Length: 114
Length: 90
Image (cartoon, rainbow over all chains, first blue to last red; front, side):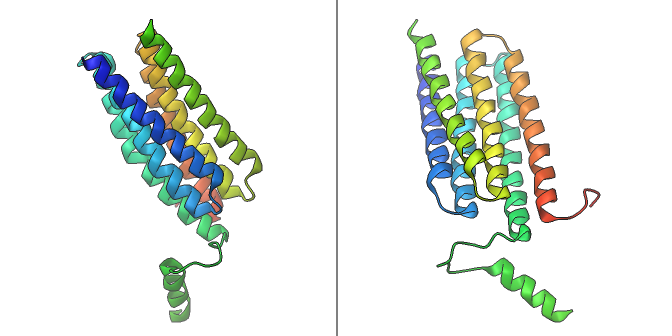
C-alpha cells in the first residue's frame, strides 16, 4: 500500500520535473526560464524525495530523505533569487513588451538621490 | 520485477530532463542562462540519486544527494556573485 503511494508521488514528481525542463527549453527569456524551471523542479525533486521517504518508512534512509527534502526546499529558491539579482546586475534586460520593472525603478530613484 | 522497471522508467525520464538542461547550457545565449541550466542539472541529479537509493536499497545514495544539493547551492551562490560583478568577501 505504501509502495503504491510512493510510486504515485514519484510519478507526480517526475511530471513536474519534465514540465520544468520543458519550460527551461522553450521559454524566451532568462527570467521566465528561471521562474518556470525553479518552481517546477523544486516541487518535483521534493516529491521524489518524499516518495523515497514513503517507500522506506521511518528507517535511516527515510529520515535522511526528509532532511534532504527540507534542504532542497530551503536552498533552491534562495539560489534562484540570487541568480535573478545577478542576471539583472549583469545587464540582461527583460524581453521587450514587459509591464513592470520595480527593481530598475528603485535603482534609478537611488541613483537620483545620490 | 515491476517495481524496478518503474524505477528504470523514472531514471530514463530524468535523463531526458538532463539532456534538455544540457541543450540550454550549450545553446543559451547569455551567461545567466547557462548558470540557470547548471543549477537545474544539479537538482535533477539529486532526484536521480533518490531513485537510485530506491533501486539499490542502499542509503549512501541519499548521502550523495544531500552532498550534491549542498555543493550545487554553494556553486549557484558563487556564480550569482560573479555575475553581479562584486567581490566574494561581501
